Length: 73
Length: 309
Image 1 (cartoon, rainbow over the protein chains, first blue to last red):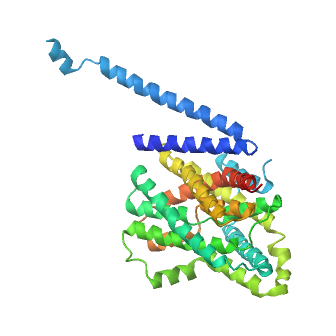
Image 2 (image 1 turned 180 degrees about the horizontal axis):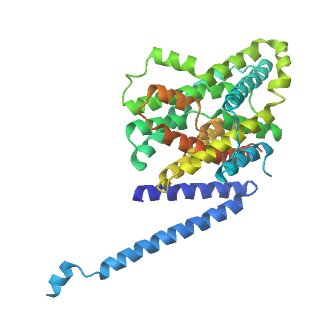
Image 3 (image 1 turned 90 degrees about the vertical axis):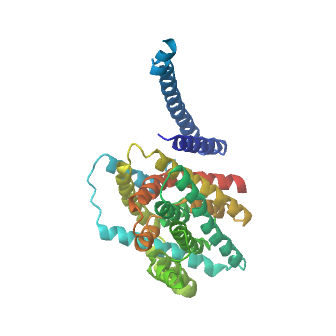
């Protein structure tokens, strides 16, 4: 997924959570529950995305590339 | 508590997603949408008989300006974040600037059920908001004013069924005086029942559109949720400035949040045939409409009540 799309989706989720928070504050039934569910879903997605990125970053750091081999030589 | 009318919409979506075969005659769907447009127009006309507000003209101008503004918010998001081409971005922006009569009908039904009063002239605003977004969307898509001329505007006004039916029935109810009461048992008393049937069909269509969503539709889903929230808040702000009642505030927010899927697709098919109609319909009908019916409409009603309490 492109970076812009990912950021826009996060912004949308954050706005939606703000709406749920307002809804909960003004006594709209079900919005508190929906807000918590969305927050959990977002947390899971973000942590998955971050762990994937971390994994790919660390694997690229430890990978033996021709430049690294040349340096050792 | 879930509203009984809205529950029919959810029934439609669930049965479509489960693959149930609910055969809905095509002619009946057209009849129901015509019924709703006439009923909304008549309701407005009957209410207008009782009081015509002198501030209606500046209010109407503000509403038209609002209709021009909404596609201008949607277009840059579609172009720069969604990376759509100019034509598709203009077409989708036009959908989000215009209004959905069904979403408006749901809001009216919920307000009536809760005995919340609203300004009588709202059907006029629904009519006024249909057109500006189509024009702005076309200008944005083409990148010039060349395609917009008097002939085009006249053609759109005459060909646009919702404008014709709502404005026509509003004027009929306004000028017919007491004789309009004869129509009340059919068009006004049966309104909620007909709306429930219509929403059942809309649920079936929305469920079908949801099935078409692909795995890489993250932007479309985000946009379909984001725009109603932004448009709704802008509408609420305008309603607040124009000093509407609680019901009026909620309706203005709903008009800002809703996206067209009847009038604009027809206009775009004619004026912008190269645009991808599938994307616009999936976004407005498959994502924004269910989101509006289930969450946005009750949310803005509650918020408007809170603000005017």
